[in-house]
Structures are given as C-alpha cells and as structure tokens.
Length: 164
Image (cartoon, helix red, strand yellow):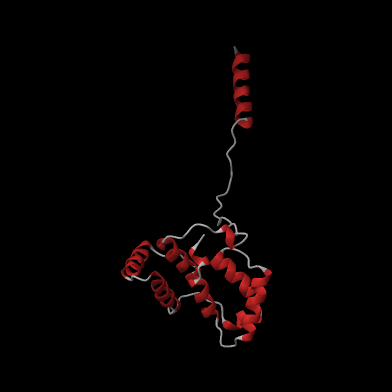
C-alpha cells in the first residue's frame, strides 16, 4: 500500500512537470502590411462616398476620422449636387486645416523620385512606373511654382483615387 501511494505521488509529480506548461506568448500589436496594387488596372471597385472621405482624411492627416465627423461631412457632400465640385471643396477645406500632414516643397524638390514614390503609395497604394516617375521628376523640375500641396490635391481629385 505504501508503494502504491509513493508511486501515485511520483506519477503525479512527473505529470505536473511534463504535462501542461503555461504559454508565455507576448501580445503583439502590429499594423497589417498593405498589399500594393501592381498597376492601375488592378483597381476595379469604386469607393463609396464614406470610403472616399475616410481614406482621404487618413491620407492627409495620418489619423482616423471620427464617426461623427464622417456623418457631418457626408451630409454636407450630399447637399451638393455636383459630386466632383463637392470633392474639390472637401479637399480644399482639408488642405486649409493646419493639422494636415504635407511634405515641404524643399523635401519634394530635393528628391522628386522619392517624393513621387511616397505619394503614389500614399494615395494610389501602388508604386509608380518608371515612366510616371520620369514624368513627375521632369514636371517638378520644370515648374518652380509647383507645391507639394498642389500635387496632393491633384492626386486626391484624380479618377484613380476613386477606385480600389
């Protein structure tokens, strides 16, 4: 009987060391990587007005738009009959906000290729082709009055920006 009790406790002791172990995984909070589109041809879904406004706000301010602000903006846009005019007014209002996150013109002119790549990825979620980079480099260098704000405005108003 004594041997049975010792064997039982010995078995219990072995099970406690070899059985379940606490998983010591650390919580990780990461941003999921965004898959870039290979080209404009891969975009075939039209953004809803809510998606357009939310994504535009995030691209320009680098933070999310609150639900209340989104509802107010959508109500305002719906009161304007011309959708393109509404988008122009919206972009203009966003650009006039002091909290908008824009690169400086000197950064844009210092390295037009990097500026172009970052702008394409930010707005179009794709890399520019070599032809697009060359065109933008030449356009930026040939137009000293051109600002980063003007380019961001054009990207946000482009037809490609309406699709995902």
